Image (cartoon, rainbow, N blue to C red; front, side, top):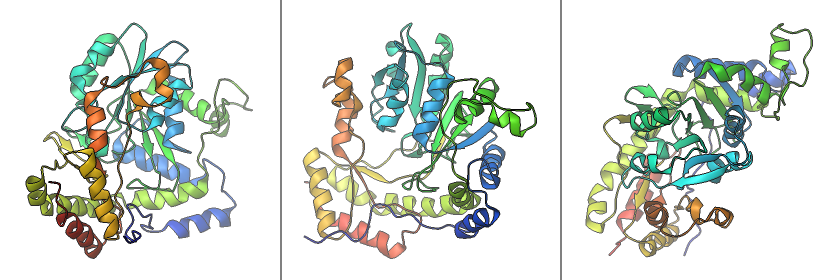
Length: 380
């Protein structure tokens, strides 16, 4: 068996990253909210039409900001999908909330809107949706349920930047949304995130929370003659060195998305016959979605066949990986009574899902290596 030399993910330059970083160093402005942070904010606001965008140190920290903005308290409940990264739940658990895990749909692997309302209680203070693989949740149905109960919706849009739902940008449909610029994302600065504010009532307080609970932003706008501690908060401001890298990537967002669209479509087309013969399910993208081309995954017939394909690809020098483990079955979630069978779809797809190499600079030749290796595998 060979050691894989074709990775699952690889970071890369998209344009003027090094030039912009050098500019920050020459200007002596490498702290947060300098030139490139402001450029990132403006680009996101202009393209997406969100009322306010703030870059943060991570998507996790942006989620923590939403929990503070929504005044989540001990004893509150927050509904989240079980099939997601731990940050989606942890941000609210840190404020004392109990996560209520919702199962996902068989097709998109997104929060199942048909199972949402039965989970709402008088203690529910937020509904957090995750647009898995950059394919939108059924936002009309989810927002209608949330509106009936007066509950805000938060979009964990870590996968979905520049994807759309019925013509609307993902991240602009809930009251608040978060983005990730981790190295595995389409657009990256290594570690980073953003908070998108779609309800103007949260904008000023978000600036305060992000600046350690101070009204520093008001001070720099000349609205106060000195700044002081006025609220709870933490250090969520991204360094302008990272913002410089990020802005160079954001400038090229259309090129990046175009490259990833070609890669995704080639996987989907060339693996379709193999998938049909082997009982493998390919991703589902509903007609109302314009996906974000974030990842390409396969659902194998069983855990055993998934693990066998991972080993087979490794033997051909290709690294493939699985994804989320069900949060409701985690050791930590046992304190809230998480048990097997609680989210059966999540439990099933978690065992069977495999992600293929997918990154901005994946060449046609390397993608051919992946496709050819997959096609040599039999799931029977």
